[in-house]
Every structure is written in C-alpha cells, then in structure tokens.
Length: 235
Length: 235
DNA sequence: CGCGTTCTTGACTGCTTTCAAAGATGGTGG
DNA sequence: CCACCATCTTTGAAAGCAGTCAAGAACGCG
Image (cartoon, rainbow over the protein chains, first blue to last red):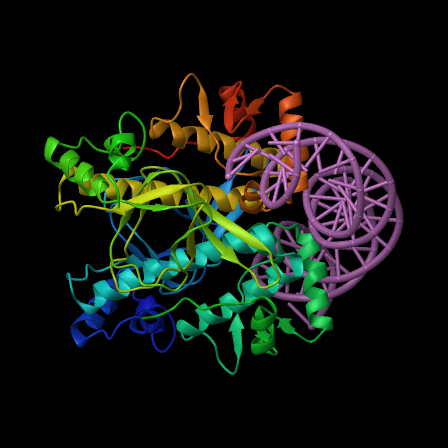
C-alpha cells in the first residue's frame, strides 16, 4: 500500500522487463508507474493467491521472487515455477479459479496490472509474457523428466540468469538469488541435501560462483551447449 | 482431407468434449461439424507442428492421440503432455512460434478450429479448454518432480481416464490406450523397463486392467485418495 | 508363416534419498 | 559488542529406487 515500490522501479524490475517485450509508449509507462504506486507487500512465505481462489484481475510482480507451488498432505511439495519481477499472474479469460497456490519466496511486492488496450503495446507485452511463461513451463517439465541433478541445476541457472537479465537484475554478470537450497530442491524435484552436494561440485568445477545470495555463471555458452539450453523465441 | 472423420464424431471424440465445456448451440455444432469435414490425417509418429514453426490458426484434435515432445541430441526425449480428442493446439495471441514439437502418437486426425465469436459458447469452450490444459501441465510438473514411479503411473492413469471420459471415450469403465510403454516412459520421466515393471505390480495388485490397448482402473476413488488426485475445477 | 515391434525378465550398477548431526550465518535483544 | 537462537548449509554412512545392458518371449501385421 506504499509508494516505496515505485522508487525501486528503474532501472531494474518489472518495468524494465515489460518494456523489453514491447515498445511501450509514455502513457503505458505512466499506467505501470501509477499502478505500482498502489502495491501490496508480502513477507517471504506469504500467500499471494490461494489454490482454488478466483482470480479476477491480473497482477504484476514488482520486486522479489514468488512461486507457484503444490503441497501434498505428507509434507512433500513441488514448486511449479518461479515468478520474477515483471512476471504476471494472469486472470483467466473465462471465470476460473487458481489451479495452484502462489506464494512469496522472498519479500515481494505486487500490484494490479493496468489494462492494456487491445492492439496496444502493453497488451502485446502481456501476451508475449504469457507465451514466455508457457515456454518456461515446458522447459520445467523437460528438466524434471529427463535431466539429472547436475543438468537440472545448470539448466535452471541459465534460465534464471536469462530472466533476471530481462528484468535488469544482472550487473557485472552477477544476479541475486533470494532463495534457500531447500526451495531450490523443491523446484527441481530433488532433496536439499543433494542440491547442496551438486552445488558444491558446480563450484568446485568453477562453473558457478555463489555467495551471499548472489550468483554468477562462469561460462554460459559452454553450459548452454551442455544442456541444450534454448531461449524462448521472440518474434 | 476426407469426410471419414465426421462420421467418427458422435458419440465420442472432439465434439463431445468441447460440448462438455460450454453449452454449444446448433450453429456452433454445425461449425465444428463442417470444420471436421476438412480434416488432416496423420499416421503415428507424424509431425503435426514442428518446433519453432509459426502457428497461425488453432487446430482441434478430432481423433487419436498426439503429444508435445522435446528431443535431445543424445536421444533422450521428454513428452510434455498428451493431446486427446477435443484438445486444441492454440494459436498464440501474439505472433509466436511453437515452443515444442507436436507429434501424432497414434493415427490422428486434426482440423482447423472454427473461430468462436467473442462471448459465444464456442469461445468459452476454447477458453476453458486452455485453462484445463494449463491445469494438466502443472499436474505434470508435480508428477515428475515429486511422485515415485508407482504414483506417477497411478496419477497419470487417473488423468487419462478423466480426459477420455470427457471425450466420451470411456465405455463400461474401459478406455483406449493407444500408446506403447516406451512412450509412456518418455512422458513419465522413466525408462520403459521400469514402466513395465511398475505396470506389472499395478496389475498384480489388481489396481489396473490392461490388455489389447484398453485399460480399466479398478478403484478410482481409492487411487485418487492415494495420490491426492484433483480434477480441474470447472466453474 | 515370417518379421519387426513391443513386452518381459534377470543381474548388476549407481544416482539420489534418508537419517543424523555438526558447522555457518544472520538477525535480535541485552 | 556479544551472547543467543533460528535458519540454513555442510558432511558422512547406509539404503533404495530407478537405470543399464542384454536376451528371450509374445504380439500384430502383411
């Protein structure tokens, strides 16, 4: 409910990301900026959308990381995907309830997504964002189904680098990683113990630098080749 | 390119499924029927959409099974999801190319999806189908990430029963299963050997009947409880 | 009836999990 | 400034689920 979010906007975050998807005009940027004035802040672990709750309006992640997650009775849980600044929680076109819980992973601020008028750049940015989200969801399936622990980590880091970059969060090749190894494990279908061991081997091989919540990939080219990483096609 | 598909329509298949999603009127059913007149037939393994190819128009699976699949250079492949009769291949709202290959699993016939006019039941059926597809995609992630082989099979069979039922393909509790164990393995992130062994234990426990490409689940209630199976919420 | 594909089976390997406990780390209050 | 606590990371040993390799049986089709 505060204005703080707006001041955090440029040069990193949601606006950078959305502007990268379509050439927004001044008015559209104004809409985004004023929507951000009225943001909601959640602490880590806070619930943004409950499973089964109706979603009447689209929302934008302004800062922080959120995730879609499914919980099992026995305590297992699977993170279906992460939401980074500039990502949207889309309201469905037909009345529908959220198929999953959406929760804050780090401290998060969100706001309502201003309506883009049909044919406008904002609407185009939203549409493109939706396609990209689907692309990453397919990637997540392939990751879990066919890659081993080592490859999953590499593939995931490449994706996160790419997405952080789109949000202007990468600086001198480093990007923030506001999650614990346990959360990463829940996203990659592994145990935190095994994530820990695999991260260590990545560091030992000097493929990854990781300290104090900041990450850096040493040689993305080589890694991308190793796991056949593909970027979503923009066109 | 033939009319045969139309004759295969009622009472099973695409039309049944779409009509289950919204109360289609006579005219809309007419549109579907005539669209089906002009269908394309593919043999098993035929490519319906190539990865990276533009998708200019939506298509409907009329009969048979298709799948979204990603191939790796080393021969591994992951099936991201199956497309059953009545499922759609959606053209994106913004110009975009297909993020994955879509291939026929069994012999398949597809046709162009007639445009539903905004606000009409057909458009609503499409929108609902899109939401349901997303729901199943999330399910697939959770399945691969957090269920063991036994649970994956059970969860998958429950989904396929549900979807076959929506297409009117279930009769006296039995439904067709036009795929090999190897394809199932590629969908569930397992090896065909392990799928085979797990199927055997399902049969041994009399949870599943499976012969001649037809399946039957003995006690869906109990199975659904065991894997916390949830249906997409229709509302 | 013959051949290619699919299904089964066995033995062995190994990646990942499980269980437990010992270090770090960071924030908080005295 | 430091003790203290909760959270997170790291390590070790042992067990288990799923993969690999190889070969034989069964099935379906022409």
